[in-house]
Image 1 (spheres, rainbow, N blue to C red):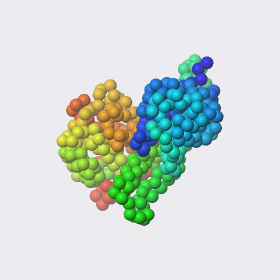
Image 2: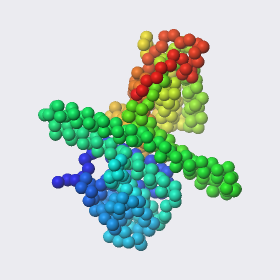
Image 3: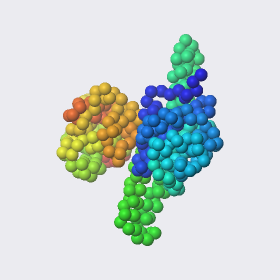
Image 4: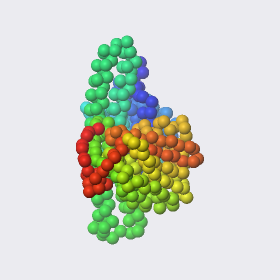
Length: 435
C-alpha cells in the first residue's frame, strides 16, 4: 500500500513558490520541503527547485529516526535540528556521502507541524559551506514552517475531498454530507492562516525596526559596506513581508473575513491619484505612461481602497513585464450599467495556453524571465479578481505574445454622485458588506 500523501495538481507549484520566497530572503541559501508519509515513517520529496535533482532523488523516502540527518531527525524529534557542518556531524554519518558530492555542507531543518501538533514534514535550509544560524535565521525558518504547514493541511483536505468524491459517486446523500464537512474544515484552515498575521509580521517588523535604528546611527557609525548590508537586509525583509501579506490577504478572502465599504466613487480623481502612486515605478523603468481621464460625471460603486489596490497591482504587473522604452496606458469606458477601466501595456504578452490560469492562486508565468527581486508568490491577480467579485464586478485579461496585455476591471456604474460628498475618498453613500 502506497503511504505517500495524495495531492491535487498544482500543489507542487505552491510549495515551490513558498521555497523561492524564503530563498529570496538569504542569497546563497537553498531550501527544501519534505512531506511525511501518512504512516509517519519516511519523508518524501515536496519541493526543492534549486537543490540538485540527484540529491533530491537520493533522499526521497528517507526514513526518520534519531540520527537520520537533519530532516529525518527533525521529523522524528519534532524539534529544530541544526547541523552546522555535515562533514563532521554524527547525525549525517549514514548520509553525508549523499550530501557532500552535491556541494552541501550545512543543513538546518525544522518540523512542519499541523494545527493539531501532528508532524506533516520538514522545512530545511542548506548552505554550501559550514554555517551556524543567527536569531533572525531561526525566526525565518520558523515562519517558513508555519506557512508550509498551513498550505499542506489545506491541500490534504482538498485532496481528501477529491478522493471522497470519486469513491462516493453513487452515494449522493453521503457525498453532500461530506462536502459540507469539507467546507467547514476548509474554512477552519483558512481562518487559521488568516489569523497568523501577528505571529508572522511581528518578527519581520522587528527586523525592519532594528535595521532603521542601525541606519540612524543609534548603535554608532557604520562603514559603507556595513550600511549597504543593513539596507539590503531591510529591503529583503520588506519584500518578504509583502509576500506574506499577499498570502494572508488571500486567506482572509477565502475565509470570508474581508469587509467591503461600498461608496459612490468618481473615476477621474481615482485615476489621477493612481498616477501619483505608480509614477516612481514607471519612471524608474523608463516607460511611457498615459491615461485618458473620463467624463467628470463617470462614477462607480465600489470600495475605494480595494479599487485602488486592484489598479496598483495591475499597473505594477504591467511595469514588471514591460521592457524599458515600452508604454502603459490607462483608460475607461462605460455602458448604461457598467464602467470598465483598462490597463494596457506593450510588454511580452501571455501565451494563450496560460491565459486562463493567470488568475489561479500561486500561478506565475515566465518566472524564470523575472528578476528575483520582482518575484512574488503568484497571488496578486487572484486577490484582485476576488476583490473585484466582492464589489459586484469582474477582472478579465486579453493578451498577444510579443505585443502586450490588457486587463479590464469592470464595476457597477453610478448615474449621479453629489459633488460635495468627497467621493474620491470613498465617504459617500457608504454601506458595508462582508466577502
